[in-house]
Length: 336
Image (tube, rainbow, N blue to C red):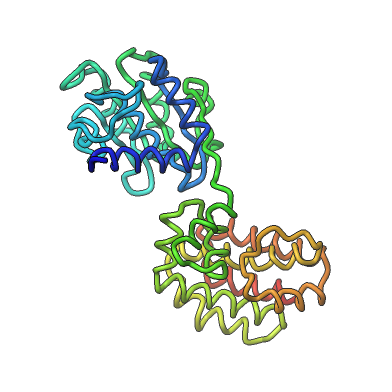
């Protein structure tokens, strides 16, 4: 097998593993030449949305297709993969949002013929982060599609996209990878079940899970949150002080503070599943004895209320409420 064949097989296998049904569907579409002009790919992070968009872009410019699918190794396929093809334009948020000027630039590109052919492809990542002005501007050329243009809009939050944009795109749902399958893949990489269990609850991406497992900050974070939960579960007053001494000093960024609450939420979810004897996959299997003792002291109503408190705290963080205040108040409520 040539090196090129190996490259092609690797890309095909990755997408076929992430989204086998969608892969087969798009292969049929490519074989019959019936791609639509605009798609909205929606699903959680790590489900293959960007990879599929890039693969489909390759298919439109490939010089050596196989049954309509891209070879992955010709000059055009490599340029698309390297983000160097002049007729494949990618847009992502500039800071916190996609701004109207970015969409105007996109519209200008839409109005031109392709540099090397009549075909053009546009990939817009995190389309839900468009400003209202940018989203309204996007509608214009979605309403007047050109047969030589294909647009792929990618989102993790379909509910935040204007209905008018949704109605002009073919919606494609990317299902998350089942946790047990992802855990098995991590075990193949010598990441134990005890290490991997929490990872598969936090991400659907194998690459992200591996990266997190290697991250020293994340591994410290995991231990800090478990210690905090353990203190709360025993109603130790130290839990309140722990927020100031360990939580706030380690979780400094807003994104990391949300992650802290996600991990705490998973600890309470584990306890709730044990309480109702409905366990699928614990996030903290190495601490099952502690979780069992905790759920025996409380009841299902208390555990459910605790989970609701954590979810409310997450919303407060999203509203830019002081993180220390959120964590301190939550600690007191959970120990009440």
